[in-house]
Length: 286
Image (cartoon, rainbow, N blue to C red; front, side):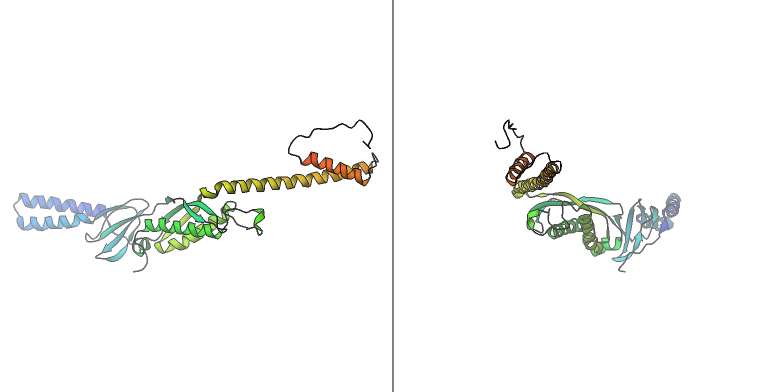
């Protein structure tokens, strides 16, 4: 037997009724000194009792007979089976696993701290019971291995000075990274009969030794991007001002005065501090 087999066993309430009859018959035999009947009845009673077992909702019982797999009982209820059967309980409920934060290197070689949150459940009791030594520990170890592999496939973030920007990053591409993590975990845990319901990054940050440097780098990148937008806006405003002045013949400016005007406007528009105005009360030549 190399795959899960669902079986049905005897109703426990019927066998409980039979057990009560045996107990009553044993007492009756003892009272009437019928030892020849009493001893066999007691032996049958003792043999029957271990056969009773319960299957709670979203749990299962894996049945073995002298090392041979008989089947799995998944339907909840009160049952009786061969007293020599060995019954191993396996939960079918969904379980959460929050892995430890591990330090790994991303695709660019930067050390990062990362952890994963996994929601899983057993879908094949045979694989969970016999194909791996301890399926719960197997889930923990494989989750750790999967998140380490995932972190090495993608960079933490993109920077404009990296040359070639990555389409998928650990920080920005949440959906894509989660799908890749689910697929990786599903492949690893399938041999243990585990179904991955959800997998996603639970914690993500640069390692402590480079966190301050990367924060400064992010701030510098943000400042450069903001300055770039400011300069673009300032250039368009200066261009519009010169065109309006020339179009409406408000004032005629030679190339030297245009250059001075452009310089002054760029300083005013691009400065990160308030400018101090200077009022010229003379002529344009002063």
